[in-house]
Length: 80
Image 1: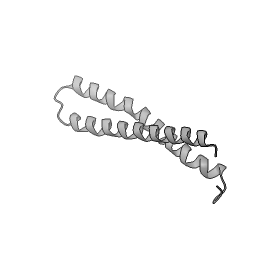
Image 2: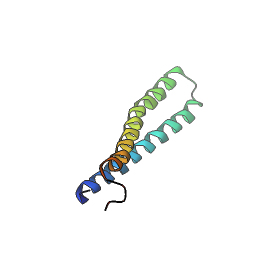
Image 3: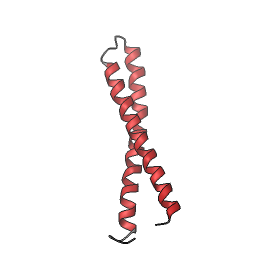
């Protein structure tokens, strides 16, 4: 694999992982805050924030999955 392509794939992989864990953290924090809410308006705002992070989490998971499978399919085992 070309070193430049490898570095680009590594950067995309790390970026996907950061995005996934950021979305996971926002979701967990949102659920913790959701337990303390007292008004319907607060619940709506927090649920909206949680639903927005779902797309980021899915994109991060797909990015990681593609970047993990691609080198395995393109490079024979043990080749350097």
